[in-house]
Image (tube, rainbow, N blue to C red; front, top):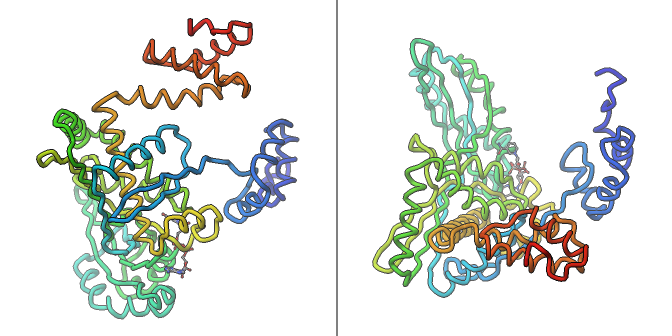
Length: 434
Ligand code: NAD
């Protein structure tokens, strides 16, 4: 890198010096500088320096809570970090609905993560498979005595080797993949599994004379499965019918399934972020599982039985309550403590449960008022803020936007700006509201 490169050594600067460099480069101005320095307490930013490179500051996100989620016969209050206005509001209403009319149960099976060793062009797949399986017990034992010693001492560690053949079209030769199943106890396990597969590579190469290219954790951890079932009682038949039609739409059409599953992940991601978990990993896992049949589908299924509406969620949710930043970040610690989570599987079950509840909230909104009405009413506060209204102007602009929404079924930032301008030129009742 040339010394005239303005970013040379940028990552080595202190945060203060980094901000000064950004000012000099005119990438931020004085007002931005003040926001970056003052928005979040410097303790958090000091901690952030230990997590990522090139820290400028911290990005505050709302931390909310959904209290009273009745789950497996007990109540849990679920902290969530999320910026989308409607999510916690919808979950709050649904939590109350479930408390009065529903039963929500969860389960979790298995806790193995999968690590992959990839042989791009396998010379002799049958021989590879026979050799790997012959030495499986010894290879696993060696891993558990070395790189996975800590997990093995906790009752986890390397559990199995699975050999897969992936055929290329035509005569281009076969690819082989060896899976290491590793029980990760209460960690999410990605780093642990990455270390294990890298340690395994030279042993397998020496045993099989095959050439391994890539060693990496898989985020499709279908060796573990989290399930949630929600039974809602006394649901009017027309609402049931509407919800089931919308749910079927998501089962059969990937375009709809993407939005349906996004709604489920609205809640799951918010819990993942609040607990310091890797939400990208959970997203990848859930979406890959949703496509397991060869077509991307809804991650939930809805059926009816008499006046009961029954929802199911099933997907691998790999989370940790140790490792990564879960036990180090003060907010993540607080969130785990608030939920009384003692094991990773408990956290996965809570995530699945709120994902399914969020799905019910969305399906119910679509079956009744439509999504716009509820979303936009809540979005009004964002528009009021975005319009630049001062604190003493906000109520008037909000009232105006509410009447615009009622009258026209839509409301935009332009409406908010017009309402504010009208207010400022002295119209007691802004023109747009007249
Ligand atoms: P980690 O590297 O922090 O390892 C977990 C540690 O916790 C180990 O040292 C383990 O010995 C210890 N531990 C203490 N008590 C334990 C218990 N009860 N059960 C299990 N372990 C216990 O974290 P990790 O879980 O291996 O990996 C998670 C991190 O990896 C996340 O930060 C994630 O963002 C990151 N990551 C993810 C991917 C991916 O998903 N593709 C890839 C690379 C890294």
